[in-house]
Image 1 (cartoon, rainbow, N blue to C red):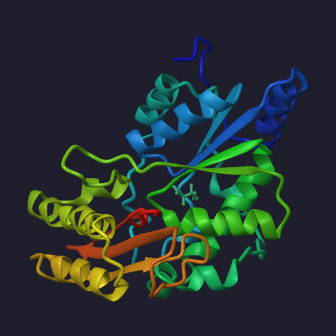
Image 2: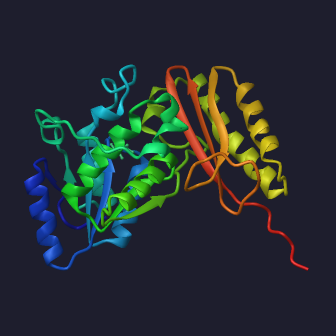
Image 3: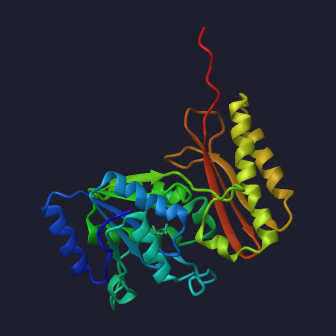
Length: 292
Ligand code: PAF
């Protein structure tokens, strides 16, 4: 836990001034962008930033442009006081809470789009979602100018897109992806889990079960990707209350579907449970081939 009081700012100029003065003193800057409603997944990112960097900035901003018209922007949980306490306990030094007049000034008309990667998987049903994410993340990174920015592996496509974007735009920030944090029952932590009833939460457990099934099959030497996908889909489709969007196996960098086993693979699932969209994923490691 940090021994310094947590500072909060909302203006970009105040953020830049504090970060620049720390940098002048030789500090490395870690940055954790969030939309608030922090859970242990977020605090694990803040802790990872604190382990690597001298000064840790967290942003809290519910970004309107990444929500579709029928999505949960209005009801997205906003619990700033609780979030600030969690940031302090996890060792953050500065929390930046910009508002919409700062992030989208009057007459705003510039977007950042990572083309192909944003159209598939989540992007196939959530049109414009990733354009909203890449636009805001560019603005957050350019405002904070950190050495390292931290993202959770749960939003696997998001971190892949942000990596591509930083490469393409030569944004001088290292992107670190931190492991998914799960509840003891296996459900990946998400601020949206708060929307789930007890029955819906039980249905949501099928995502991590299907991923475990895929991991077990690959570890046992199964090489038929179509068969592994079919097994995941069967388990998910048999779950009451759950409507499967996709359960697939892809290359971790291009996110393109694969049909044969390769050394690095990611299984990705999205499903709707009631009105809540859940996503989850895991890396798949093929069984080691015995050398003779
Ligand atoms: O992952 C999130 O919470 C958001 O997509 C992010 C990266 C903070 C951008 O609004």
